[in-house]
Length: 217
Image (cartoon, rainbow, N blue to C red):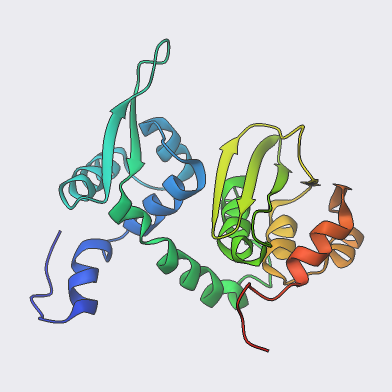
């Protein structure tokens, strides 16, 4: 990665994460946890195979990610964020919040839409709204794919697959799921536009309407 060669913490940060695709790789690893190369390629439509390999090598050298071996019978190499890499979660939250105003028109005809992006938005924006010692499990089903989002105070986990134990399940277009989880649409507004909400609907309404824990009045 090229350096700006500026003695400034912003520039030093951008030396590491400012190259194209780096923060989106962080996004995928936050959304999916330890991932195979093929998982990352699938979640980053448009990236060339050799460029993804180059970015992963550079991020590993900088201490943002590490490799591990998946247990048998998978036997594949997994990429995961290090503790230093996970510190970029706040950067992703700030970017997600800053970009919400550019999401109101919906996806363009050539825009990719994937369910883990909507689930990650919920994890980033809602985990600080839970009461202490509580847990909220959200199912997200979009375009034939499913995600399971577990929210806890100050943290979250996401995994591919259905969530039979979900408190609430959102089924429908990913843009409507993301709009509800970000507060752009209320659950009722999203339902009128085609989103299906099953489970404890009031819990979802209270969660997306709440101010973050510790926020001032």
